[in-house]
Length: 56
Image 1 (tube, helix red, strand yellow):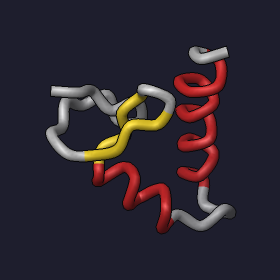
Image 2 (cartoon, rainbow, N blue to C red):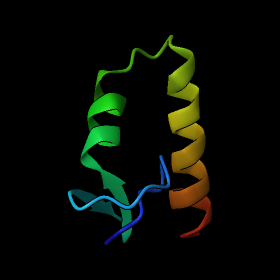
Image 3 (tube, rainbow, N blue to C red):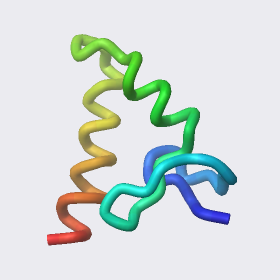
Image 4 (cartoon, one colour):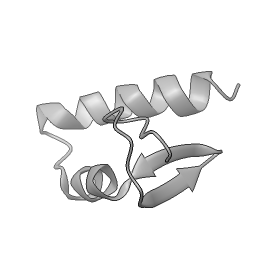
């Protein structure tokens, strides 16, 4: 079962971006998080660390 790069949990359903997995619940939360919310920066950090830097 894949491990989500946002929450680090094993989840059965989600999406793969650049061969990295994001679970359905994290994807939904990211899509509905306002850019002014503190959690938004957490998502940006996780994506930058796990997608951009890892696949550079």
